[in-house]
Length: 391
Figure 1 (cartoon, helix red, strand yellow):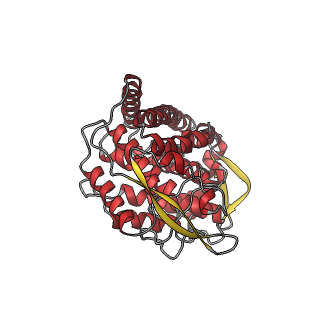
Figure 2 (tube, rainbow, N blue to C red; figure 1 turned 135 degrees about the vertical axis):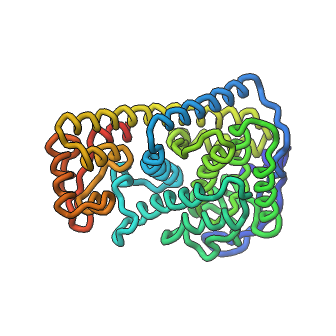
Figure 3 (cartoon, rainbow, N blue to C red; figure 1 turned 60 degrees about the vertical axis):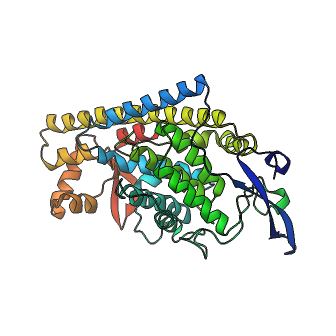
């Protein structure tokens, strides 16, 4: 750990810790970083305020685009699964987006990587279901973390609780003195730090929500309150804060791909803030990421809205109105239909579902996904929708 730089941090202090050497098991001494509570004021440059304003405006335009579709919740699933895929990739868990989007979380044979990714979707839905006037609590955060790690290698003894062990951030197997960063040790100080952060989020300073989210994200990642899942949970809380701040009304913002593409800069920026206390640099970097992510998310929403109208029109021209038209419109939210899925979703007979699928295949809206079945049922895909989602 860069103890010499952190020793002079204006926003935290080092505290002595001990941890077993991974090779010998012998106890070794070192230092962990304990951040101060978040400030009520930060000094930002004109350039950073411009970046914050651009991010806020980009989020407003994304929110406006979401209202172009009668049921914006339809686009939540692909947005959440894209975020899930990318936020997990930041932590070293990879799966192709097409497989993530088509995956069925209830399948028993699902891979470990896919389980981690789909757990994020469940965790996000749980977070988005919270009443917005209900204060965030440690119990709520811990419920999210338990859902996130359930059935994965991260489901450790203290899952669903503030961690009871020292954690090191760095290469696997790093010794205490070799770790890139050592978050606060377990105990009262860590719990107090999390409680202070949640109190700050509930009663934030008078700054734009984007600035609040940047500051809270740094603090959460630096506290690293759980044994596993902190990065994914911290990025999810960014969306939760933007929703609670009424900056967006639907969770269609996908932020992790931007940070994934700049993983080293992202990690370096978090560490640099701990060392030098330069909120301006961190907030500027974070705001740029939110702005770019909002623009990309808006463009995708607008393209999906236009494609939805085009698919509806194509079905109508072919004289296939009714349920076939509705299925075609809903493909922007789930581009991988099957007869059982269509049957259960639209309450059709088995023959009715077959007929609807066949009609959409005949006019080129969907095509068989060769060699792919779910519970022995042929899967289909909407290639035009996937081209938009994967762009």
